[in-house]
Image 1: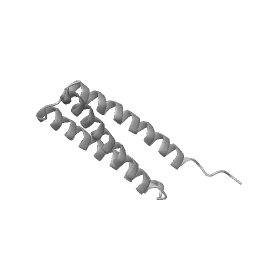
Image 2: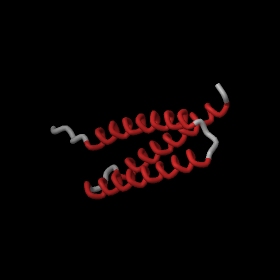
Image 3: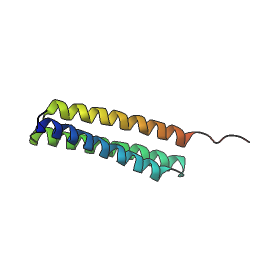
Length: 100
């Protein structure tokens, strides 16, 4: 495969992984806080991450010499995996404590 294709895939994976890492850091920061603070951190962080991801995606597609299909596919796959991990983490965080 040409180097441009691999570079595009790696760039998409890196951008998706940065998004997932920010999600995990925000979830960790929200853990143990009040419900209102938890929701503000999680949803505010999600809104910021999505805007930043869209801006980065638009800039890369517009100005970087990439293979667009490879970049987009890798980014979507990585974001979906990150969202799955985020859902699992949130489900574990919000699970009620067992009654004794």
